[in-house]
Length: 58
Image (cartoon, rainbow, N blue to C red; front, side, top):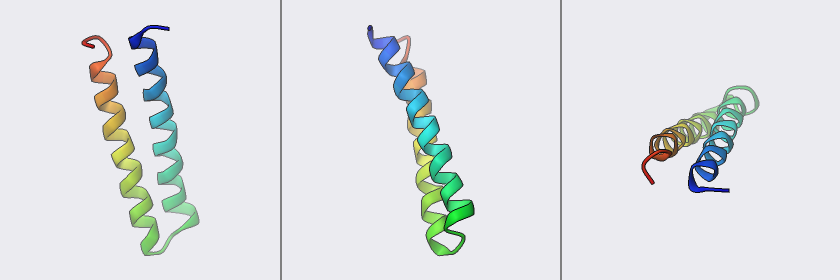
């Protein structure tokens, strides 16, 4: 497994966790805590975007 494969797998995992956290924020915790879950989910998307951008350069 090379570095690009590891970054691709990490990107997929981060996207899935981001979707899970946003889903929890919207459906499970609809009160104030939902805003926190959704914000962390968006943060996971940002980190996944960085991993995807690094795929060919590391």
